[in-house]
Image (tube, rainbow, N blue to C red):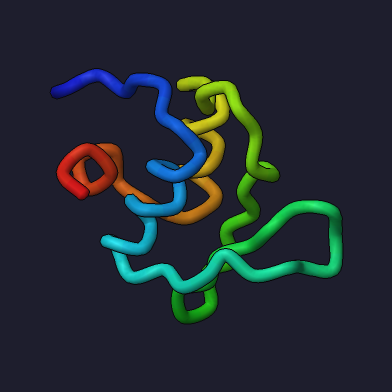
Length: 73
């Protein structure tokens, strides 16, 4: 099993796109959302630093995304 590593915000948006998510859209809250069928994925606002592995793990759980799918996207 490959390891997760930090990614840029642009990469964080690109990979869910490759897995069928649309967006990011402005949600009702302060963070952008991405959508796939009935799954709603809340992502952090754009910023300069990389997205941490801990946050990526939370995003994968929330988006019902398999680790291997994420790594191959």
